[in-house]
Amino acid sequence: MNFPPVENGINYLRRVSANLRHGPPGPQELTYVVLDLYAAAEVLLKARLAQADWTQIFRHPRDANRAGYESGDFESCSITRAITRLKTVAGVAVDGPAAESLAVLGCWRNKLQHHGLQRVLAREVEARAGQVLDFLVGFVFAELLPPVPKRP
Image (cartoon, rainbow, N blue to C red):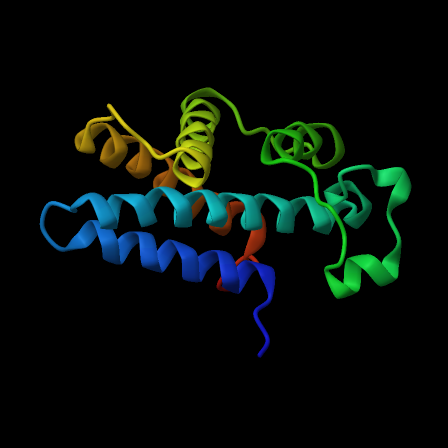
């Protein structure tokens, strides 16, 4: 199996889209929307950070080593730290509504993983998911895919 980070992130986005596409999503679909969308954000943001400097995706860049990076056997930084490092290392700002929605999504993801998510309206999850999905699709095209050559 070979799942490069950008392809992996796009696959998460496809699953999110599939879970939102068929009528009003139920609790199980919304659970996976939150989990998959957060995973997509983490993978895609760190893929861009790695393009700028692969050591920066380590929790502690001073501990970075190429063998660990290439094998994927290391502790990576948080998505919050990746966002900060993207700005300082790569000049890529993730702010405004996208940053806010990513932070909310991160809180929901943690609750789902550790305690369960309660007292959140389905339409609120759908709205945040839409904001993050919109941001990530634009991010992929702007920051991760090669530019389309201009016609002569």
